[in-house]
Amino acid sequence: MLTISRRLALTSARPTLISILPKKKTINRLLFDNDSRLVYKKVMNVLTNVYDNLDKPEEIRLPKYATHADLMMLRSILYDIRSVTKSVNRNLVDLENELVEQAAELGNNDAIAMLAFEAIQEKSTSKDDYEHANSLIRQLSEAKHPLVFKLAGDLAFSKNFHEQAAKYWQEFLELENNTILASHVYSNLGAYYYHYLSPRPDLKKAKLCFDKAIQFGELDSHIVKAHYYLGQLYTITDPELSRYHLQLSASRGLQESFPSLGFLELNVFNNIPKAIEWFKLGVESSSDLSCLIGQFDAHVRSGNSINALSILANLEALRAKLDRVLNKTPQKLPAKYKELAETNFLLLNTFFSTRQNDIANLRV
Image 1 (cartoon, rainbow, N blue to C red):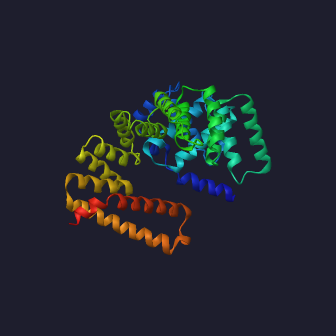
Image 2 (image 1 turned 120 degrees about the horizontal axis):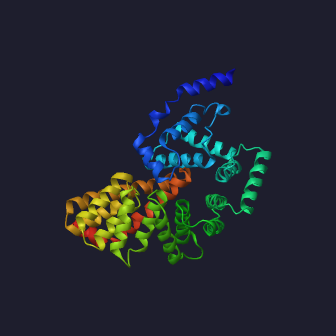
Image 3 (image 1 turned 135 degrees about the vertical axis):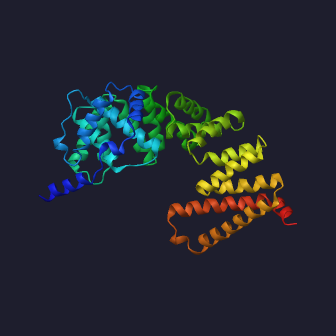
């Protein structure tokens, strides 16, 4: 009885599905983009049936026309909505998850792979369920189901087994190399060659992967990252192309792009006003230290000593603060914050040692 009451409470607390989904026009566009064979009315019938029974999934009764592929397509659309809006609605996430569950029950191998990998990572998974999940993964691997290799690579990478992750991703691409999912794998593999390959990066392979990522992908977070990396790779050889890629990633809110664009405008194109704009965006959006330093350089270059001195005062205050934090209470700092503090302190020391003449001239 307690369980029933709880379910009723949860159900009554959920808003109506129509109130949390985008407008019909947006849904129709997403259905078109995903080559849906179902029209809006049928899609809403499926989604409503699942959504209204999220707290009692045993009562879900899917229409006969709904296939496991349809369910995974709808799950993909909900994921796209979440990615584009950069917001997480708990109810829509629950709907996404239940669509995967229902698709798995209908025999969809992608859904089975997703649930199996989720199970082996959950600490609460029982021994029997863990063994069953591993058995499913093994069967899918033997059947050369592409997604299982992508997920294996993602899991290996999350555990810092970067080389093994790359091998799994390459196996995926041998099976599937011209889809949106493949574009994500190309982007991940490019980042591996750019950052993690030992003993040194392979920038040619990284560029090849990033080029393929943007060739097959849509402008989601993976592809935005690929554009950012291409911007870095072209900085010396083709600054115009570098600016194109960096502007594209910046337009999608990738904050790492702001300092790169600022220094590109300042040092390559000698466009000081534009450089200051990018640096200002970086400081305002994420208090980026590189952008603060960039502002100083740009104001010095333009002869604006008042603004340069103001920025310098901020940098000096920040260095003093980091010095106190790192020298007096290092043991109290969380590891991640300590690493960031040490990186920023090193960057500030480099700044003050390399700008001595500029600083001295400002104070004359």
